[in-house]
Amino acid sequence: MHKILDIMRKSGAFSKNRWKLPKRTKKPFGAMMYVAERMQDTTLVLMISGRVTVYSRKVFQGMVKAARFSGAKHIIFNMQGVTFMDSIALGGLVLAYLDLNENHMAMSVVEPQHPVKTLFEDANFPDLIPTYPTEETALQAIQ
Image (cartoon, rainbow, N blue to C red; front, top):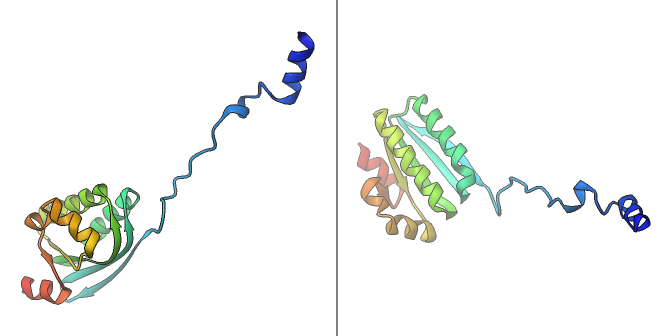
């Protein structure tokens, strides 16, 4: 019996690492979110593309913080290039709106595409945050 246990020990059968699962990576599934920005008068336009998910929340928080110090009076989130958005990211947009509103800055969303637009409508998002079909419409509405 002791010979069998010795052989098993030498082969690593009792090794602590033998039964460990591989470490999970913290990389998101699929494409990432990308952001480009430009100023137009006193409006900061954030052009967002890709997948907006739970992994994007830190980016949203950073964008809002930067927007507060940009000198802009209005922030437009152009969602034309967004291919997917989960409910956590939708909550991040609502938190961004509340944060900007608290700092006396206006926010609007433009050009959400089909899957994102459906999510917005199901959550009654346009009732809370102004949503426009184009940037031009949003810019006209704030003047």
